[in-house]
Amino acid sequence: MKILSIETSCDETAIAIIETNNDLSNPEITILGNSLISQVEIHKEYGGVFPTLARREHAKNLLPLLVKTLKEANLYSKTESHISKNTESKLKEIFSKEPELCDFFLSTALKINIPQIDLIAVTEGPGLAPALWVGLNFAEALRFIWNKPVISVNHMEGHIWSVLYGSRKKVVFPALALLVSGGHTELVYIENYNQYRVIGKTKDDAVGEAFDKVARILGLPYPGGPEISRLASKFREDGRTTQIIFPQPMIHSNNLDFSFSGLKTSVLYRVKTLGELTLAVKEEVAYAFEEAAVSVLCSKVRKALDMYPAKTLIVGGGVISNTYLQEKLKMVQEEYNDLMLIFPSQGLATDNAVMIGIAAWIRAYNNPTLFELSTLPLKARANLSL
Ligand code: KG4
Ligand code: ZN
Image (tube, rainbow, N blue to C red; front, side, top):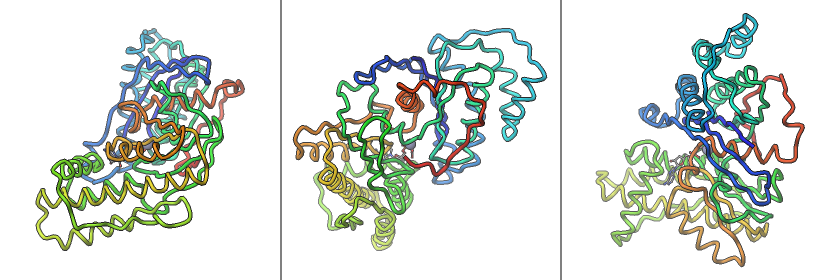
């Protein structure tokens, strides 16, 4: 099955085309095309993602990315089309909030021959509403001109199933997923495909958000995760030690929930006592913060595995790019018999469209009704949960 997928929930505009086999018990996924435009540089000066700017950038990026991805997948050819009044007015209705995208769509998308794909997948939430809407309206417009079914998926399902690409390990159920991103920190118990139960989540900030905020406190650029991680690794490699020990919020609580806002505040107060923020001080604080954050994550994973024995531990989301977290989770894995640990392949931990295509495939698997063409409008669900 060939799936074209669209991701616009935050600050990456991404389109991918994947081809899957027809056997979920032995998944084989090929990436035919995969393009992404990151808006990191644009949002940098705000120290976070600015939703209306994200919306505008997605609207600008989607069509060039579509053409690029179709070309990469050898699914692109041009056609001479006559645009009927009916088509024009329908597209104007779909893009009523993105008139600039509508004009571009009329002059570009309608000149593309209908590609040989089976399905369109798009993120419906969770995420920034203005950003999600652009992707959904774009998917709706493609559904209209190409007559292809659309499946809208949960972004977090994408982060979970991102691990299926390129993995030689098969997911054995039940599985436990730790999702660590800029917007979410969740533990999900997965009895089988499409059977999710959120067993723990953050009460305030997400762990990636804490990395980003601590980076800002230290005067480091956005996104902060990679920067903090780099400074902390340097501190560790130098074999230095520190007196700074940050609190590990909720580490001893009886539940599987997280809280990272207190940790960030502790960093803020501590930094105020440290005088000049030299590189050495920044490295020390980054190290102490990373230790605290990673320790809480690992301890909650242990607790979850004790309460909900699982055969596979899946870890998804941008923060798993953190090599120290990876190392520590490998140590957790060794404490449990026959526990498999799966991380996303390079490039699929942070937001991307490949994972959205995979999530749609899993939704659509053995579910022919999802292939029925619908004319129901797609809807953004900014607070969607699993
Ligand atoms: O999954 P993602 O791309 O976007 C969301 O859905 O939020 O995750 C982005 C988050 C950012 O907060 C970023 O700082 C964090 O992932 N991140 C990292 C690292 N690389 C990215 N956090 C810690 N260490 C890293 N190496
Ligand atoms: Zn994400």
